[in-house]
Length: 405
Image (cartoon, rainbow, N blue to C red; front, side, top):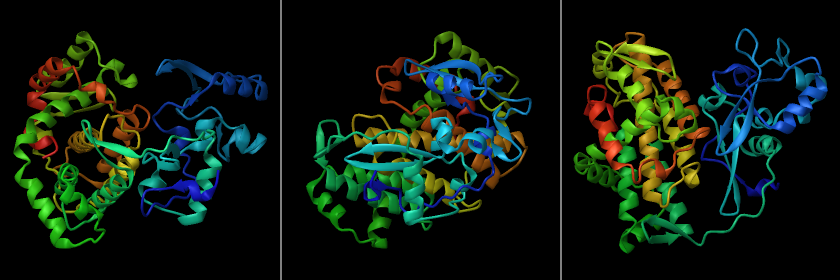
């Protein structure tokens, strides 16, 4: 893999902090059958597997954990496999974390998982050193990807690949600009996408200047249009949280009515308390309602801004038919981050969110929604009746102030 082919989101940095969270985090460490056989040959007296799962029709094996819920191969000195047999003998997921490579438009884009504390803090190496580490981690063999001459903007309407990348760059700059609240900047990104359907606006997008007046104009236009979108995001966030919290949410399929009702009963019929399966949190619904999302950067929202941009870049992990729907999915993920961040604060009986609440909220959505179970457009299409039912049943837990706006 040539370094010139590797691209990261803007201003990305990372170096391993040796915290070993990747070896003991509350998530699945999935290995293949071939890797199971290799570990058995290296350690014949150790059972490396604790169970099985299935993702997208493929069987995976879960690496065994010790009594501390750490990887069974983790020692005080680090990874036993790495120490005794070298980097190449480690499972692919271990060699790759926190790098997740994707080939699109002939280039290799690396997303960095925000479950890693060093990534979250944007701490470490940049430039060639970062690219070198990414290349070393990429166990997948990249085959030549088809170059996209045009990208679907909305429905059948298309824009050129060059225009799309310029549009994406402008949206990224808006989101990373601390002069605008994150809510306003994200909605302004959607306004930019909708403006791109006009040829005159495309010419403006090609102007790469970062004029504040232009950005402010876009933000003000988006604020004026936010009210009609409330219904859409109530419906979307209800579907997102249902799928995360339901038993089948791990595979991110639409759950059955029985599973839905199990989630609803914990959310609505527990004397005003909300219980979340995925995090084990229990808190008062009214308390959650009273925790407001900060419009100023207290706590610092820059890690969340970088996280959103890292997923925005090149439609990474967003399976949608066009840019506009992909952006809606990204906004839905942002709403889920806000909900879980508030939930952690409510469980601690705080009146405001803290930086640790924000970090755990991002981690929860990164694992359950974005990284390991990418959102797919099919989750919302042809499911209107059940979506509206969810929206109605979630009413007490999802007042309008809790969704995107």
